[in-house]
Amino acid sequence: MTRYSWGADEHLFVELAEEMSLQANFRTMAIVTKLRERRPDGLLDICPANASYQVRFDPDVLKPADLESLCVDIEMEVGDAHAFELETRIVEVPVLYDDPWTNETQKRFRDRHQDPNSTDLEYAARINGFADKEQFIEAHCGSPWFASMVGFVAGLPFLYQMVPRERQLEVPKYIRPRTDTPALTIGHGGCFGCIYSVRGAGGYQMFGITPVEIYDPARGDVFFKAGDIVKFTRITRERYDELRAAPSRLRSVPVTFSLAEFEPDPDAYNARLLEALG
Image 1 (cartoon, rainbow, N blue to C red):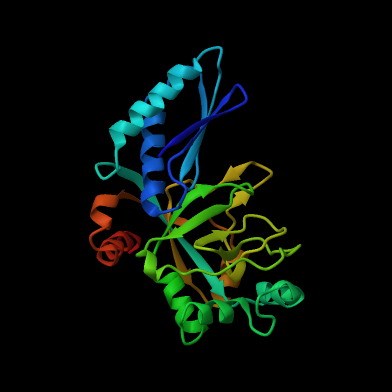
Image 2: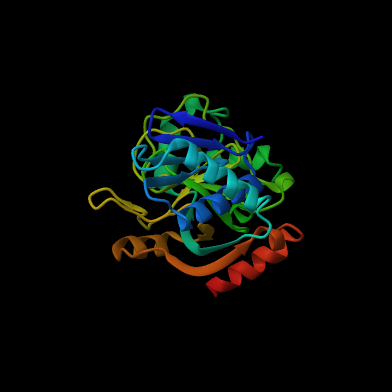
């Protein structure tokens, strides 16, 4: 049951589901896309999240009742979003797994971890039923991830693995948060992956690091957008050093994503999506 609630005089918050799922997030993306297309005067900003979205508006221009009515109409039109196709892009993110920087950070905070005697990768592999961390890494970079939202920290994408729920990788966050996490760390907590956009505190398990910047605070440049599809690609230390020495943007190609075509056979659909990267 969708919940509509108000934040002071300028915000409408719409919660489409209590539980995160690709279906709930895709409905959010469909509604937000259509709301942007019809953008009435007075609608200032639209922010999608995992299973909800928030709208900022000018109540002197756009009446709250009219805004809510428009959102309800779009929600009814969208339905389960199976008729909606999202114009988006696949982004290739190079990752140095088991890197020295996150490993050093892990050692400094083992007293806050569920298993002080193993690394985050080893722990994640064991609780997900893999024989070793190599098998876990293969599963982590073997399927694409959907950027369900961007935020919490500026530029940080939350990533939802595009596999059947029973195959999703899941790990708990640290028992107590760290006071330090290297920038560009590939993290994971619960069912969500992420890329730490800046150095700072954090509680997600740390699996590796990417050499390519995703956020420039000086210019306010945020690379990721909600709805992006991410493909992690494993790289060597040598390749990592090359990419750090010659900074560049992440490689991306435009694609169309359809939930209706994805659901019957996610693996086959993912394989076709990833062909776009060549």
